[in-house]
Length: 269
Image 1 (tube, rainbow, N blue to C red):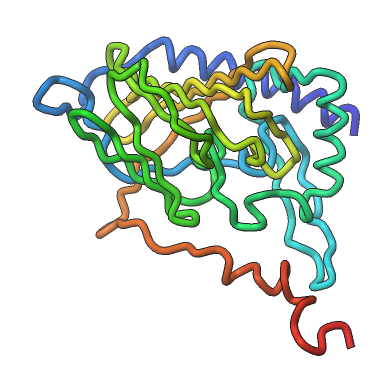
Image 2: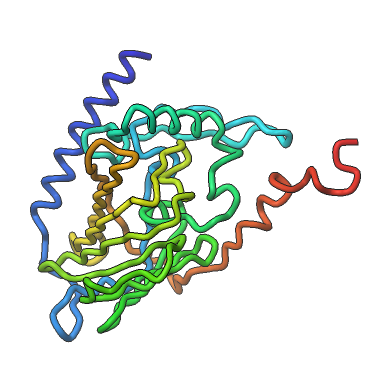
């Protein structure tokens, strides 16, 4: 097991270097553009990988056991955290580990709550970007989540905290930068118990690497939970399926037996 983990760490290091190299290239050729010259990233996109299970490097393992039986298997992954480890404060790491041990009972996504940012980006469900002159809409298949990105309004304040946060965007060259604040502290970052507080600030960067690939990066800052800012990065792929569109995924109906079956009349007899 120790040798496997060491090999995994080396692979993560190589992957991080390759990711940084790709981002540095900032490929601009063959990128569709809007009338004002901005990259046209409108379309349906999807992340591939296991980041939704665990942002950090992780081995494959069996899913948790429930009264309904085992919940599948969790695939291994190299992780998407720059440097491999999330820099938790000691007391926050204890909370994360306790969350992980009680994942099925505590994960907000299992309960079908809105996933928050950045988690919505790398769930195994597609999402759609719709660009506009004053705002950009990002809408997600999972639970009908969406968010409005207010463009070039850096001083616009959030009226209240919300599940998908307060989103303010601008362009830096060919990169769409979105600053996300005022999220509900109940959202998690993945299914491994990684969490944040209400102080979380996420700065996302969407950089075209060609017509059908975006490099996605997000820097997370939360002084109540993490000892320093840290970053994740991964590619997003444009969905090219014929007649592709977002479909309904109202997840409550799929998990209500798991979550609420014990409330049925006669349950447990």
